[in-house]
Image (cartoon, rainbow, N blue to C red):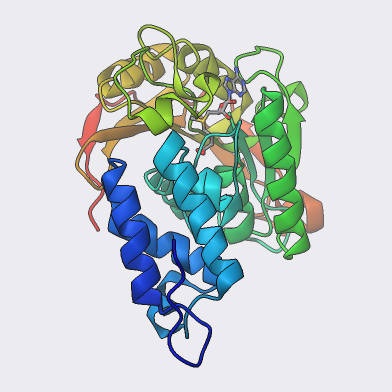
Length: 338
Ligand SMILES: C[S@@+](CC[C@H](N)C(=O)[O-])C[C@H]1O[C@@H](n2cnc3c(N)ncnc32)[C@H](O)[C@@H]1O
């Protein structure tokens, strides 16, 4: 972009920079060119998007950064989040780049569902949460941020994603969140986290779940890792063994929440119901009304030793009645109203 500084300032006015970036992106076929242009200019100016129009303007260095990002986005359709280096699905802004799945807003719904239902803080050790297929760490880190008492474990198999997960976990710990525990492991391995077997309060997962297709936007198909996107021909290759692993980890009345493709909700609910370890199985829709995630509660009843005056660590240990079996309710459709 040719700089057009406002007289006497040396700065290019924000609307001029945004208009120019929008035109280049739109000409390259980027759908939301104007929104992206504003995001890029805000990033280059180092201001929040909401404050962009209040900025004095962009200097030559900032303008060169806008040009670099716009050119890469226009020429190669590299995902904008990779170019900006940050993305978020909930409250946290995480580092992302080549090799890691970009967190999507709908995943925040799973996190919200789990946070609403975790056992309340007691002052003792908090709930144990496992995020299977952690990617950038968005689920694990959002939960650790919201619940400093929780002991959160994040499982990721692929090296490139693991690098981003470690970086984000370190960033959040430096920012003051309770550190999470990272496991370089296969979320479908029946021997996963044996030390946590039967003790976990919530297993949450946004696994690779898209049935194999080439009908995806070019910036997704061409740049995000296939190992993060696809779950085999039917989208269930990772989900089926992962539900078994979840069942083995969960404590009685523990929570399972699994995101899925909008075409496979009924199948995922059936996988969870057939597993045999769960009572209530529910289907949830996203904000656009599409089937998006399945939740279930593990069978059994907790007998909490906190009652009767136990102290410290004991207060948060739960004993379980073996012989109580929850009813398996028929799968119900549940929308999330906002
Ligand atoms: C759809 S991405 C979700 C990432 C993150 N949870 C999120 O919501 O943004 C799925 C992640 O699962 C990882 N993955 C794929 N197969 C896996 C397996 N068998 N075990 C553990 N992680 C796996 C991928 O590398 C990718 O990071």
